[in-house]
Image (cartoon, rainbow, N blue to C red):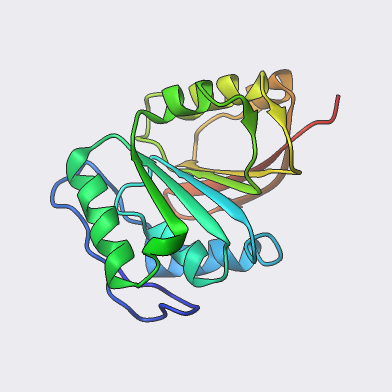
Length: 183
């Protein structure tokens, strides 16, 4: 896995062994960030279920002002820190060893431009995060991107106050782009 573009372009990132994380392939990462053009530069980026930090580091490399990485697995937290050091992006990254649902639930206000989440599949963790976010005040026009299996149902998001603005399907997974509906 490598950084696709920006100041850290072509640098190889570490990943953790095992099946605890699923690093996003370079091709899918490039497609994702092409769709995020206009959202990332100078953004406050939140990477939930951050794994090895590849998505948040890509955002920083492409000009995000800051990225908060939230990851519970201690090996993955260490990997993110190593990757931030290797890419010389540590000064704009904050790594929290925390459960993503608890982190979002504890926010007073949502003050991020982009929230990306790639939770373990089949556990409805994205639904739990979205439920927690649905009760929050947003200080920005926040874009929320969820990576999920291609057959994951998101019909419930409207009832939580979110609108699907885009969907990009790949062979086995997809990205859903959401915005919180103004009340």
